[in-house]
Image 1 (tube, rainbow, N blue to C red):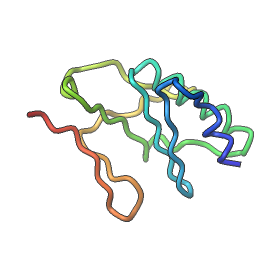
Image 2 (tube, helix red, strand yellow; image 1 turned 30 degrees about the vertical axis):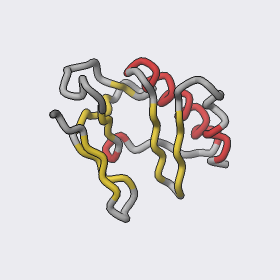
Image 3 (spheres, helix red, strand yellow; image 1 turned 120 degrees about the vertical axis):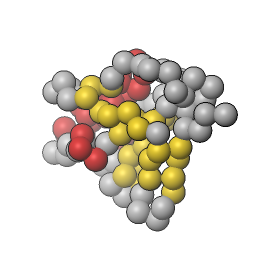
Length: 101
């Protein structure tokens, strides 16, 4: 079940997985940690015969350095997850944006 995804994040790891229906939000403090978390989720979802749709998946960087260029996050198959400046989470219209002050 998708609840098993949340078990991938240990307390104090600064890694978070938020699951609502079929929407999954991954939060990590670094690009490297995000990619590792993505791969762990992909492995877990494989057991459920599910895949992450890279065409509907995006990365958003927040914080003081949100506009800095960083490495691509790639899935297990080597497909990059695109970086964006705004994400709509779920269909109820929750938006996250990286605003540069």
